Image (cartoon, rainbow, N blue to C red; front, side, top):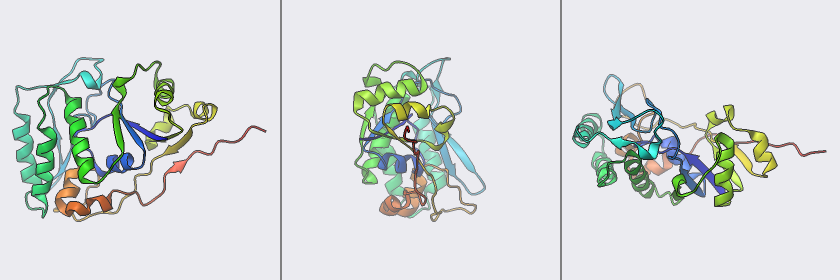
Length: 237
């Protein structure tokens, strides 16, 4: 079984959904440490002169895992985000579809960031006709760190092939994949531009931008143009 593992993001970009669509089992890896300034609680929207952040306010202490981070409910962030989405995308042909998807995703009675992220991801996957099974890593008792922790997860879910993000090569122990007879592939993120409302195309904005501009055709814009790179392990002599 081909498995992908990533932390949950807030209204992710299209590459995130290409990643999910490229595996049979997608694991939301939210029982690891939350990083400030990451994509966990924010993403980008395109405006006339620039791209700007759209951020869920959170209450964080050092060392907290993503799935324990709570949203700062003192701010009406849903109202703020609705206004930002309207400012950014209201002139797009499929804006109402994008806004309704966002509304469905954030309409969850929870104080936890991870729950909001997961619900949005599931709502958006359904719209994009992505049928990959999605589970959470916190349903398992995982041991170790970095590659050891992943190997613990792989054994529990029956992983035979692992799709990794392209930057993970700096910390993954590829030799462990060879020893465990697990195929290792690095995802390629290579996409053509699509019609955006404003000049100077920004490829790294939220998937809501793509949906607002292309509607149901968005599913045809989320496949990388270059193939993923599979590590070829040398056989022992």
